[in-house]
Image 1 (cartoon, rainbow, N blue to C red):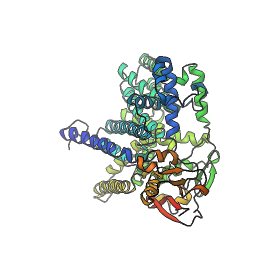
Image 2: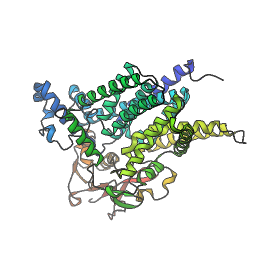
Image 3: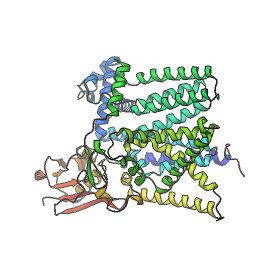
Length: 531
């Protein structure tokens, strides 16, 4: 049997070809996605920090660039000053260096940068799986499963919070495994850098240094590493990570420890008190039941990945029990334990601490690549299972290929609204029981429909809040956006458009002239109010 743990001629062309195709696809479709409701606020956060830094090192540039003029609030007084900006500020800097002034150029650039970071996350997941299972084919399986996760795939192009954090988290996990398996000064630096950037996007990234230091210490306790090496690596890594966290986060500069603790406190008791549609009921985000996140994960993950992941979790738990207090017996088992801790730990913490969640489980997306690594563990075990039926391995491979083909076909069919994917576990009447297009991406198609079917030079449109429709209009071609006027009440409007956010029941307007469908469900409607 071929040794797939080593580089081979087929690997040397298959793997680069796969990632080249993924990159090319992203570059072709990143402009297809609509404007999501948080994007403008995220750009503002990056611009405020960029202005704060630029005023210290290049004040003449700030004074000359009129795009900085709206941002008069000092960073210390900015409402979201405690948000990490390790992605937002570099993208804002790139935008200003390129001299982009048109709103479409600015946000298409952001969509492209979001995709490129997530593309890096797919590569990191491939490396983690190929290393853990010593088989590049299983690395590709993990990468394919992440790519063919419909909700995540859509978010790769506009969700510069959760998807970017997820990608950076798996990149930092990859550098962490390399460090833990063989500590060297170079690996200390790269892991510290990856962790600092991840934390400076979302402070929950602090889990990575905690896990890294915990594993290093445990390897010292079990005698796998000598204590002088453990202490040296830990001190160097801790000091470098701390310094880089402060360097990349301007909010921390005046008072690093105090501001870091304040940011951590603010994120742990997140300031969002809205309502969410969950199982047919409108519920306050602060009063959600414990099963909110597990249910959302279960109904939005392709079934093959879900079943394999649960099997993998069970196998790793059994493996740990057998090792008793040592937890692992070799490097592969060490990686399994790390993946399990980083996957299930945050989920358990969210349930126990009753953390504020909303819009599904997107705040927990960062655990998903770890879940897929456990899913590959489960899939491999299932493949090696030896039932009486001799055709089992062939059947499992066929089922896996069928899952890939069906999921890919669904994603092509629903493009660019893969973000409303649900699996069969969601049941019936999904749109009346769970949030659908909470990002508001489908408003782009609604506005394009109106301009294509109404030739008048001036058209008024109303969309109930919360809505990104004002910014979505600006993303349209000049000849279309100039004809549209967004008004504040339905009484002023020719058209009423909605994504049914916080309003799952039908509207009473009689003239529904267009519907936007995805995943076999209506997610947007256009009503004609005046003729």
